[in-house]
Image (cartoon, rainbow, N blue to C red; front, side, top):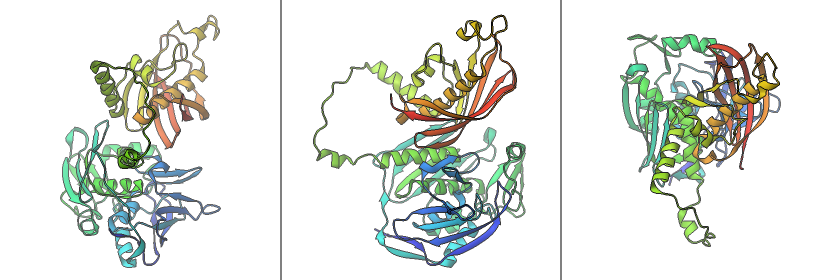
Length: 457
């Protein structure tokens, strides 16, 4: 069993943040055994810290963001990957801004700095975890699995839309393979994604100095590709960084098809859920649980439920009957008639607004308009589906806690189809925060941010 490790001395690196575009100075400091990896914001009062744990992941759009209270740290995956790849268990990452420097878009510079500082062994042993059974995640086009193994290994297939630039790579993850096979792989994006990223306030610090751009069949870069399969190797780099958020070394084989930060972090949550299960051996020596009669289910009913859970967790469309299996709301307060699609942290649902809605009797006579607060409620319910789709949350209630940045732009009339688009922007434990937009005929009629909490019934 190997001992835990930390840095021999502190290191410092400065540069620009990929998404903020601002200058940032980062220092990585040694830390005592059992400390883990923590990020510290030195630019904020009290120098608040966030543990590098998956329960603090709040946003996963194009990068991984840690959130604790009002403190955020964006794009942590490349630094985390370098620490995990070299084998550092305990460290403090100090930042004077809200994200680490992007460097060249890979983990190469961070890896070199860590190696130059030296890695030292500590007295406490490293806790290595092996899955007791396979773990599988299906999320949109992404499929990820974890099987027990003697080492930590990642096998990945990446591809753009219509299979563009499909690549495959597989490797054991250790300090030698990390330095040689993975740490130099740079981040990349497709040219058609750039406009969306810019409009959403992202990649302000992005350039060909720190990212590869794929336009049609051309690869735009300031230097030749560093690996023949540089794109899929960077996907593995991201997996190493995101999976390190489970807080323990893993002895297992991860296979991934079309991974993303959202899927990586959801997969990490599934791993933590299995880690936290009581050991079966310990249960065998404990007192037997109280016997409770369970309702007899037919094989057909059990199969139907299993198929539904698989569909719910994997994403896709839901009809109103399936929606009511997730949400506890019923007439006249069910504001979702169906789900069109679910992909990662994004969901699109709809509500058919009919003249038979009971609120039209008083809102308003001879001029029926759907109340804006019910559009807000629809956003909250759709956001709740995203949280409740996880098997461990199914059957709970999503309590509406707060609403921010609410704007009603156009009235909604009987006969309209209200399309509700929601993105889960924060998920910490039982608390979720989502951004929602309601549309009629592709025109925005309202928008808001809602916060809600899951509670047992």
